[in-house]
Image 1 (cartoon, protein in one colour):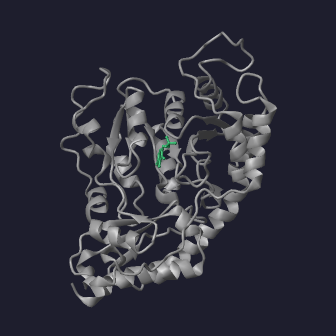
Image 2 (image 1 turned 60 degrees about the vertical axis):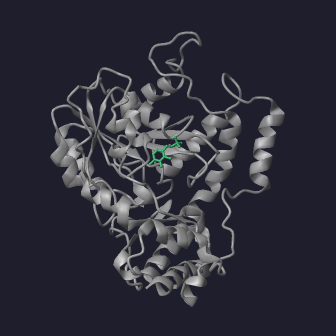
Image 3 (image 1 turned 180 degrees about the vertical axis):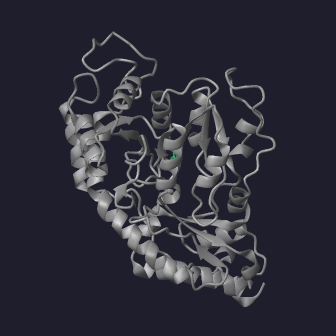
Length: 407
Ligand SMILES: *Cc1c(COP(=O)(O)O)cnc(C)c1O
């Protein structure tokens, strides 16, 4: 081993960064808010306080949307949105393959067919041209994912949806607080879906929410979340399918406090992301993703850069990512393969008969998503993007240290 290789933290050398980046971030405000609910003894529905409604109204107002409906997580929120959009068994829903599983498995749960279309190599967001090419008479919904908190090309996507009479559900699980042309993500399509799972930029440990401006979609999602009850109806009268997907008053109290921090945190990640771009652009073999001009605020749930092994002595991406994490940069190699490669899709373990026999994912291949997974994409996680300027400089130093050691 060379002297420089021996200096790498993964080989027992000193770490570039000793600092710990905390997440979640909270103080006595969160503790007091939750304690007050616990002490009050009104923890959940029915008729037990208005914490949930208060948070829903605050989140809808923050996003510039008319309605918000909380639910148990950011996977169920996608299912509520799909069901409310009126999908029927066998309908097709267009999704990207470079995302978390439930963007696509929520479609399966509705007895519908996820159709995977490739991502754009500059942004890793779903490609509008690929969406257009995948539309068939059975297509009902497009689910763009604002990957990493970077807004999709919403103008192009909404235009496609208008021309083909499709609904758009924004999967904004990475996009709390982020913007496209000054509009909060989730507020542009017919429904916006968010997760409050513990890794997300706004969290209550678990939880989810949908937002919409549409009165009918609101009424249906509200009903599906509440075991098919309707507003103003009797407790034991059920009109729609759905289930009990409600959150507790404690979660809502926590979220209301966390929401007060979101805008400042989003601004900080955004500023750090811009600065980190300027630093990493200068390193051979490192290319930050492109930020289109329409991205007025980036959520940086994940800061992503593309890695070129040829500038790192042929070091495989996964080994590079492990070295970077060992140096103290909260980072990760990302998804191992595009979603259609998951056993769920390869083996069609759908447990339902409404999906046509002809559906087959064994030949699916989206070259940009494949390349992102296998060779190119490296992630720096959102809590690291809440650091200061010196931390961003240290992230760049850690990459340069690895490059010098292996080059
Ligand atoms: C986290 C996530 C979800 C699911 O949210 P949960 O609250 O974990 O169920 C959906 N889509 C994307 C893109 C996610 O990252």
